[in-house]
Length: 238
Image 1 (cartoon, one colour):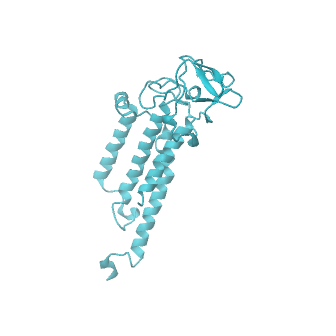
Image 2 (cartoon, rainbow, N blue to C red):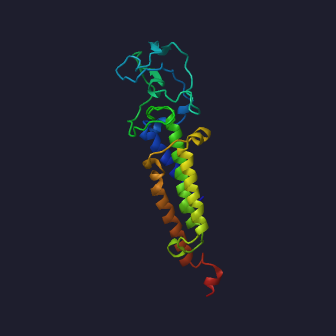
Image 3 (cartoon, rainbow, N blue to C red):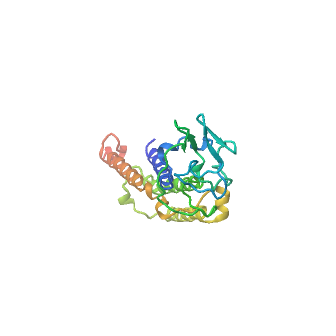
């Protein structure tokens, strides 16, 4: 109930940043994985000027209903079936003029990264979720690195206790290697649904929360050392 919420906010903030970088606006994310759409044909390309936005399976609108050669379905966000699908051509609706329009607003593609699985850009695809979840995990681990040091003592500042716990340093080093294996070893990616991140997504958006966690912990320890109510009994009694 103290630093845990800071770490949680760090993870979710990083998650939203990664999704935003891949073209997903934060306001469109709630329940997106439950939304039905219309699969496009292989080779279709997004075209905002096309009558059906590039989806050749969709024929148009009739009385406010999408007319398509395929039934609507929920894209596969969990596995690899739809990893090359451009979701901008999948989530469609009819406007008041019976024209096919995007179901919601899309953002700009800020990171033109190719997926190591689909070999196509990650933006606007279900692959973005895997990258965002991996970045969430990395952000939480980076928060825990600092948390392990600030929680070592009840009242002694990190400035005085130093970084002399070599077992902890060894543990955090091996954990870092483990995290790299989660992200950059292919068969591990297959097993856990993780992906290789660029440096900016490697927990970097969570750094302000690390600083906030440090300030909070150091402030609490300062209060413990200097407030008579919170000081240990042996200090109060001299």
